[in-house]
Length: 97
Image 1 (cartoon, rainbow, N blue to C red):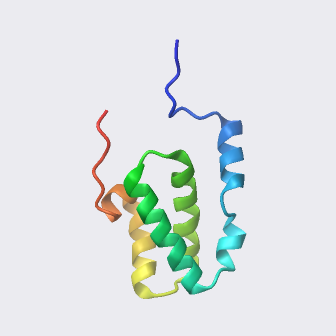
Image 2 (cartoon, rainbow, N blue to C red):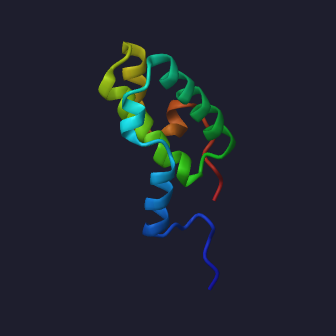
């Protein structure tokens, strides 16, 4: 039986998570750098909303933005992301099954 390319093993999940910017590195970025990361994430997630690497990075990025509460708007964006996910927050079309 052939596996879908969207199925990821736990080892691969951990490797992908470690390859992305770590939460610690994100936490110590300047506000402008974090905003740049957010813009890059937004552009990337529009192109490939099912990418596991982007999903992991997005979780960390939004968590850091929420923790640092850089602005009220970013805090609300991060909270909406946690509650509703990227499809609702960024008005993305859900992929068809």
